[in-house]
Amino acid sequence: MKPVTFSPEETKAVVRDIREYFEAELEQQIGAIPAEMLMKFFTDKMGMYFYNRGLYDAQALVRDRMEVLVDDMFALEQPARHLR
Image 1 (cartoon, rainbow, N blue to C red):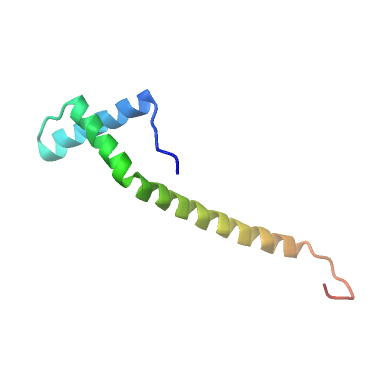
Image 2: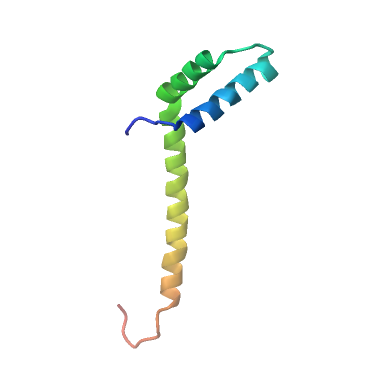
């Protein structure tokens, strides 16, 4: 898996969310640099768990859609005197 990277705009948004979380939930101020370091820590150490969860969810979605597609294809079959 290649490393997860974020654009500068995404990083700013996540840092802002971290800072707001610390203020609202922990009643603590956190600077932009510590918030970005926390973001990097979670990205590096736990990002693969979130990535894998998304991958598993996508696999389940594709599997479900494929089952429907196969059923739809069988519905197109025309009656014939011989079996496949």
